Amino acid sequence: MTRDDKFKLVEKFIIENQQAYYRLAFSYVKNKENALDIVQESILKALRSIDRLDEVNYMKTWFYRIIVNTAIDFIRKHQRMSIMDDEILESHLPTSEDEVTDFDLQEAVDQLPPNYKIIIILRFFEDLKIDEIAEITGDNVNTVKTRLYAALRKLRVEMREE
Image: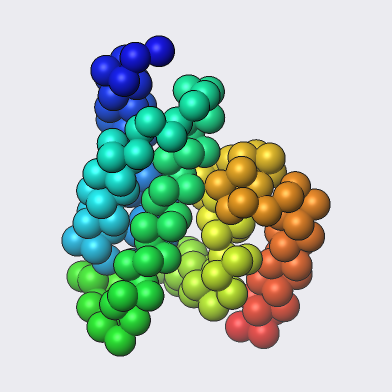
């Protein structure tokens, strides 16, 4: 496969899955502009490193890994800076009971350690399989399973306390 063919495939793939990539980035930074910056930076990184994509069948996990790493780098660079998004501000206003429950779950997921949080997000919010998560995180399948169950236990405890 030529480099141009790879560019076209990656471009098509990114466009088709743009909402999923935005959601993943947003789950890290909770801010629209920062999430868009992460996705944009991830696309740039992907296009720069397109020659490293040996197998087109792994494009999904390859790009998810780029987004996860870019989001983590973004958080490290901007650790001290905290920008509150309009949606977060609105979520603190009185709302219906169902929305409060969703907020509690979101807050509980946010409290998880990063290596647990990413697994919960990828498994339940992005609907990825365990082996895909292992590929994205660079961990083996058993480690991902162990962390998934540990994260679920922590969430159950956290949700019961609230």
